[in-house]
Length: 273
Length: 349
Image (cartoon, rainbow over all chains, first blue to last red; front, side, top):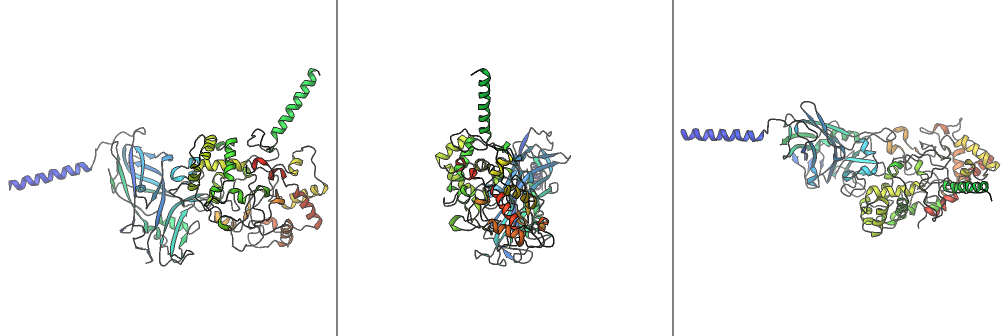
């Protein structure tokens, strides 16, 4: 009996210890924009309930059409974080453009620096804002370089502007293209037009972190907001996209449907503090 | 010779010097580099010189790059291959551009001319910054079929270019921005402003129109000036001039704006150097100016989207007599700028 008691208390103690280690430092540091610490946002691409595996993974859309994914990449930009008291911190814009590429696992983390503190909400843009899209070429470095090697094909040369989201793959229902493949190609962009208003597929996405774990940003630690990005949502939602009738969607009115769909593909899973 | 005489001579010499300096691009390689010179009869330029001032080193690098075949996949095609100076930087004789591996584009090569005054580029206005323009021909399958990154790598590997980039931009590091800015600096100085028309407008050396030319100018202003506005002879707008849908159903401006009213609209081209730039229209369908005038007098097709200025009274188009056509052609010939197409400063060195 005694022994049992002892082991019970040990277990209880261990449980408390575990819980305590999970909830960090209960005292939130004073908000100081001069005291920046690491924060990452992880874009973990999945397809419905499955892991996303390029080329070999096989998936089915809402219209029961089969497909695989050969290429997936998108721009994330203009990251902002909000505290419970309403304070908003916008990451320095020059350091706030990320190209998430499925073929380069390290790129799934958007790494930024924000003041120490507890954040309850995350906002970012899927795409590139119109201001940066029209900025002097000297200000478009890194992933925004219109000639960059690592993302050749995320920029439209003929119609100056970035491709925000690009997904390509094979779907048997897609008609045979001139290369003899049954390929779908979704290249979605459009920042609203330079000299005449046109489609605007810039999506600003806000995610509440209170339910699945706020971000507690502290120096010497690296909080990670882990998002699941359900790529199947690109093809379903307000519009169920058919590979048979819309195998190629680029700069066109229809692209608005896909952008409206993918604006809803981000789900907060948890936060590692 | 007294003091007065000397003062007069000095003043005269200063004036002569000032005049020759003030002339846009005197065109002899030995003269000091004048940079961008605003022609007296032109409006203020649209280009953002504040972020890319034209320097001698930048311009010369840009000129070398303009004539550099390494900008294409297999090092066969340069910008100058399709933009030929003697044809006012067009591809004279080709209806549509003829690029790498004998591939054909879908539109007529536009001139590299007075681009400093052109806020939107290409027949559909899809490019809004001259610094972004070369990305299109470099990467287009039918033109150079290369990647910008690969061009940068090819140039970076050449000691000669590293020296030139260092001179122009203070760094041996070739990148997209300084590659594009150098090309812009060359293109910005491709200024056609030394035609007879310009001399008359600027009252240079007693230049005057003949009677036909003067009458032609009145007719051109009255009949064409709504779109082809002096002194650049374009208002930069996009319009459907009633030539009808081409064989490839090129919808022009619509591809860029997706606005239904922009279907089959194309940029109003300037009217300078017409003698050197045939064929005409976005798809090069008219080989002579007579064919162009035939179109405007009797060939304009009515239909949705036709520019209201061409709607006419009952019959679409612009009625012109043979005499009026002769006078208009006489005036248009005064817009040919021999100094521009023979300027050594703009030629491959």
